[in-house]
Structures are given as C-alpha cells and as structure tokens.
Image 1 (spheres, one colour):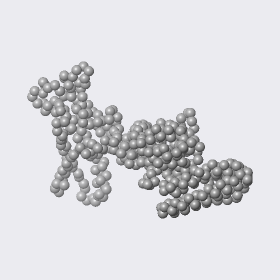
Image 2 (cartoon, helix red, strand yellow):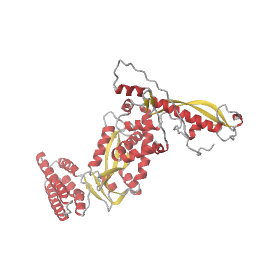
Image 3 (tube, one colour):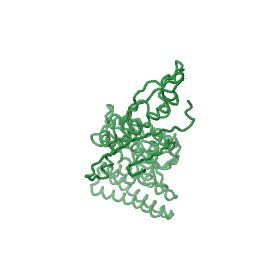
Length: 452
C-alpha cells in the first residue's frame, strides 16, 4: 500500500438526542456543564481513530468480506484495545491488526496500520498533551496540588507520574534552550545563586545557580544557564566555550568571590550591585568592632548616598549625552569614597576600609560605561526577581529536593519566567502542533430548528 497516494478522509456520524423538562428554566451554564460531562470530545476522538484504522485496514486487505480477499498478501488479523488518556478524556480504542503473510522471519508479520498515521507515544498511558498540561501546573504548584488542580482532565496522573514527566521535559528543555543559547554572545550577564533544601544523603542544601543575559537595548532578559551544584567556574567556562558571552561582557552581581573570579577576565568588568553595598559595608563595620551603631549608620548612609547620587546623575545625563557631567560625578564619587576608606583605616576599621577601596572600581563600572555611551545595569534585580520565582516554588520550609528533580523543575519554571517564547516554542515542538496545519475537517450540525 502506498500511504502517500492521497489524503485520507473519514466520516463520523453522531446522533445526539437531548431531553428537557419544559416547565423548568435552565441556566445556559447548566447546558454547558451537562454537555461537558457527556464526554463528547472523548467519544468523537475514539470514533475518529477507530474509523481511521478501519479505512487503513481496508486499504491493505480490501473491503470486508469481499470475494477474493483470501488470496491477498495482507489479511485481517486480531483486534485489540489500546487505552490512553488525553486532554479530551480517557479512551479505549478497539483497533484491528493486519497480518503480512509474505513477511520474512526477521520482519514484522502483524502490525496495526493506524501506527503509520497516529503516534500513541509507545506504551505510555498518558499522552504528551496531558504531560504538558500537568508539567505546566507543576511549575507553580506542588506535585500534590498539581493533581488536585487538574480537575478539568478526565483522568489526572498521580504526583509520581507528574514528577517523572517533569524530569523528562526538564531534560529535553535544557537541550532545547542550550542549542539556542550557543553563539548568542550576550554583552551583559547577571549571575546569582541561592540554596534549596536537599533530600539527598550527601548534602543538606543544593546550590542553585542562575545566569541571565540582559539586553539593555530591548529592555529584556533571557536565561543563559540554570545549574544545580555546579561550580561557578564550570558554568562560566561552559558559557565561554559556547560563545554565549562576549569576551568583553559586563558582569553584574553581588560580591561573591567565586562568582566574580569565574566570570571576570582581563577584558571583562564587574559591576557590583549597588543595593548590596550598604548591607555588606554594615557587616564589615560590625565585624571590625571599632565603631558605635550610630557611627556605623552614618558611614553607611554617606557611602550609599554617594553611590545613588552617581546613579541618578547617570540616569539624568546619559540620555542627553552629557558625558562630561557623568565623568565629573564619577571623579567626585571616587574621591569621597576613597576619603571614607582612609578615615575608616584611621578609625581601626580595616575590613570596611579594604571593602570600599578594593570594590570601588566595581561600584562605578556602570557610570564609566555610561560616560562612553553604553548602558550597563547598576543592579542585579532581574536575577533577584528570578530567585523570587525559585523561592516561591522551591524554598518553602517543608520542601526537600533530589538534585535531578530540582534541576528539571528549575529549568521549566525559570524558562517559563524569563524566556516564555522558548517555553511555548518547546511545547509546540514537543506536541508537534505544526501538524495541525495538515488536519482539516468540516462540521455540519442539524437541529430541530434547521441546519447550523
């Protein structure tokens, strides 16, 4: 049989009789819910697949009971049921097999013709549309809650089945996004890390590390990397090898040493998130133990005031291309913070002084670049917001994670958060939605009042 001869057409007829009590008044919603409860979509899908299989069997074996069929190479064989669950409902298909009487010993003698046209996803009971729906729920809900919230499905997978599909989809999504990140050459990267409780015996916490790319021209961001328990040095090396980051990219982050060392190179500058400076400086002053609380607060306020004055100056002058004004403000900011560092040394606060002196270049990178006509973020807020999405789903006190499951769920949740286009494109590809374009149907409904 040549399966490419012409499109296959089938006709399915449904006879639907509705009876109501004319003395009652029914809300339109009652009709809608009633029709939904009749599982019409499920019944129609079963009829379509079984009719399609009958057409294909007939194409191989000839019309049923036709004279001379017994001499055909292909003969009708047994009929078996195939159970499956889709978003249309729970199904039981009765499908006929065909026997190839001329099949060699190493060839398949019995087969279902429908398998050449319809992919039943192996022996899986829950098809990919159910997987996609429940996996999407699991990005914001616990596995148990995802089961209870999937009430619109005829049959909902167990939380263990959902978890298995999350791991499977997370792995595939990682490969999908990685192929698109390679060669993207981001000019600004914003990495950050957090911890999630572990259920593995070898560690109390999992180290979650996220790297975003920031496109300041488009005011958009995307995920470059999501890793669990991977050192920052390996993450940075991997992104470099895949040319996901330019050689002179700007790195915006907190002052975590291993992170900064991993991403900084001779040609890359680090921008310290200015919102972290008061907090870190306060800790250093406290650790030095030389100044009173009031004195520490005053110093922190002065340094923060200088930095945010610089930020406001950049925001005012850069759009106007008043670069000389920015350079003047940079010089004043440097002078005043250097003076504060010198004073702190005299006041027996060497750790706080060293923090200001060694971190000063990173504090003003965004302004230096603005003076050259470029925009670099002064804050790592975008990745901080991504961390908020992680906290909402993965960091509640009672939540503990295995490494594989956590990695998969993070890939799904954060791609959905930061790269919704990739997320939807991935599921379009997974569900092969492009095939919708080659499916056509016409529907005619005849009611007592006439044809609709």
